Length: 393
RNA sequence: GGGUCGGUACCGAAGCGGUCAAACGGGGCAGACUGUAAAUCUGCUGGGCUCCGCCCUACGGAGGUUCAAAUCCUUCCCGGCCCA
Image (cartoon, rainbow, N blue to C red; front, side, top):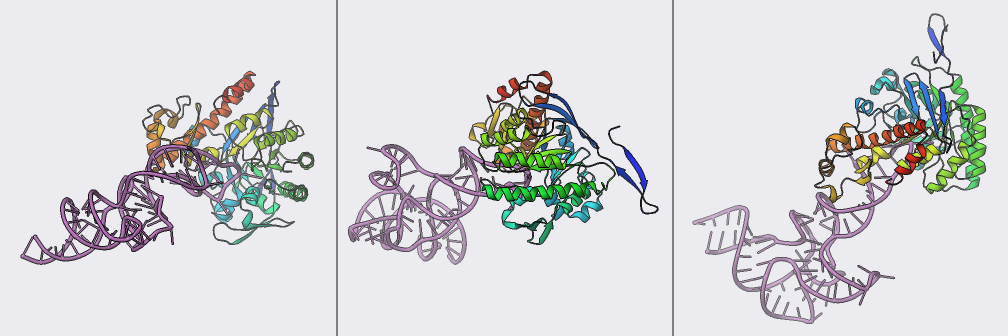
């Protein structure tokens, strides 16, 4: 019994469920050759083997893919976004439909980002204060205020299995003095987020978990201090944010190493917004359990295909007459049943099936990469797998 | 047959004496994309070089006017429309 459900009487006649969260993560093994880990995340909507890649479905849809396709590809968990769903359709609609799982007909686990990334990506449309973020809607310019607490509340309504705290994702490069102040703000928000989380209940009858997000830009002392203070607050899992924001790849790897050395082994680690297939493998060997990235879906829409034989742009003329399957190395519907020449035709013609098949292929590849990583971690051959992949990545 | 409008780069279409190898679209050829304001954005698209510049060939064909022509004139070819 993973979770204890204790009924109690609240406010006269109304019966509510008091749901206690327990450790949601089981660490199965750690590689002897690197920091790579094999584990399982437990959620009300199912267990998630780690390392895992989470396809991004910002606006309550992984662009171009229906839930049944995602299930066929065996996506274990997908990501959505608090800022976007709060603005549209809005919390009232989300509540009306009984939360995001029901709204989008997705019965597997969901993780929602907090809006912290929009603090970075929509810099021109927001203002920070000690209390939170003032956003000017990118849709209609209207004003909205996000506090650490309101972001928890919105994610309660969304009903994500895993929610993220509001943070400031800092641009790169950033001055030390700025980052110093920024991490104080994000840590203050993290504490407020956790407190509010612990003082509120899930709305939809299943437990939710909350992850903190490590910041500190490229400064070792700030990154390390952040991790220590975040762990002190205590979250169900720990994310690393503020990476892949323009820094050199090697620098990102270094930051990951600083942080995973200090994170507790019995909690999941999530590297936010990363990344390329190579980034995932490097992240795994540095002790990361979870990843998300728009790359497989966005790049699919822009013609870039990830395959077990490498990545390429399907628009390139060399594929015009190519009668090979999209990816004979994968067993997805898209990979097996269509030629590269046909996919090129669809993409060149702006046919929506092209975007769908390309997205399917790329997600299939990313999920395959994680599945193979887990398999090789279990076999003790992950490092060999990683170096094999580096020959074509 | 007469009149009239027009023929511009792969296509469509501006330009109407020099600052034109020729705007702008489209198409094509490449590139970028990392917690999604992205089915978006960027570059190239006559040929050749010793390639931040130079040399060829080019605005239907052939002549001509001019220091200079895609732009003006003559003529021929082709197309649209109108009249016979």
